[in-house]
Length: 299
Image (cartoon, rainbow, N blue to C red; front, side, top):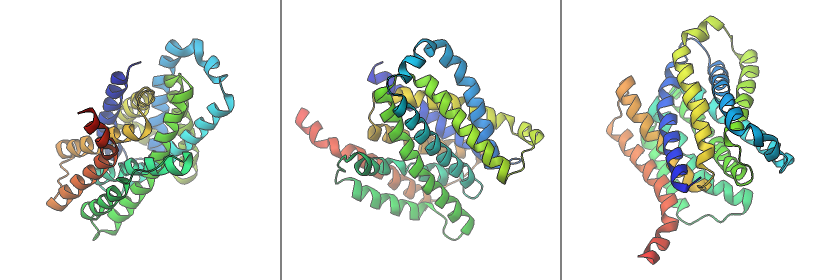
């Protein structure tokens, strides 16, 4: 597997995640966020599992035996991170719009190198601090602070970005050891779907007929985002380190806003646009600045 192939996988993943915000937003007219999540990831699991058994069946147990303890440790960490990240993101869409949700989600970009430093003692480049400052000011311009419901939604998305950061880190560490990306994507989908169903059963009313009413949104978010995109993410992070991968994924905000503008007629005012630009500059700068010296040396 080449790095170019991994980059293509990352870009396709980003496009699917970005456009899936529309399905996530429109798919809760008749069901709650946990019910949507459960249905979405069960669909993703059913979609990906047969593919995994066709292409990876012969090496699944061989790969697990490489380090059973780490295999199930990363499955647990990634499963809970993905469950919390997607659940908070899905819940946030009840209070905020697609544009806000998409852009606040990409806060995981500066969070990834910070968490890598604290978890794996990987040094943080100086550029991360001005990037965080730009992100905070971008949040101020993007968020509607006069609306308490929007503030609540934005807060949920910012919290969800922390768990997305954990998920990206653990995905990268997993792919350094194991080589069953499709099977693992299916397993984590089942993990998230099961947890979502348990909590939906406790906190929401699960009505099958209502789930059917949202079938088109669930199928899109399930097959493409919950299934295909999270599988491609594993392929992407086989050859791309966690921090560079995060900057590519940040483009989901751009795709989400464009999709919301085209499909949902969600319009941004000038302050919102400036806020979006500042956040994008922050996440790009936080990843490119460390390589400027290397680029100059090559020239």
